[in-house]
Length: 185
Image (cartoon, rainbow, N blue to C red; front, side, top):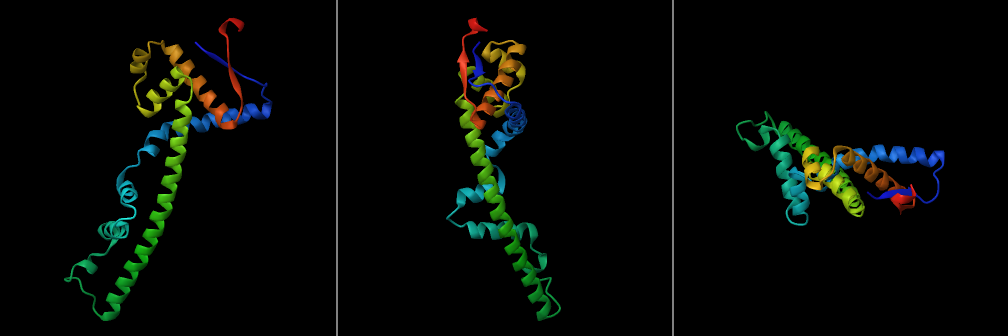
């Protein structure tokens, strides 16, 4: 098993930063797959960008939020004023909905981009470390299955997993580390 050591000893402040980053990495790793593989209406909207996205947004809003009175002539307002206010409410709601979707779209793109960066960092780890993290967090394999696939013990699995997350934290924080020879430990 490979061992890694930081090149320069860490200060107390750097140790705290690493511990904090490790905690956030575990959360990010758990959400990595979902962030990379966006689902639902927003995924379809992103795929349609540049085509009929405006019409698609109107269809989503109308199907979920439009009052029945607008699309069904049976429910007419009592006067012209009532219909005007209904259309104004619908139009204002559509504008708010489109603004919400734009914000959500931006958030999804940012989280998806961050997840792809995290995935790239994971696969840049040494082989077994990368496999343990990918099988655990991306492919969501049970621990028993991972043990059989990689021919490792349960203790080795947890050791690899913890060391891989630590190496990721070092990488993200720009802390240099190196592989050390097992004989010198």
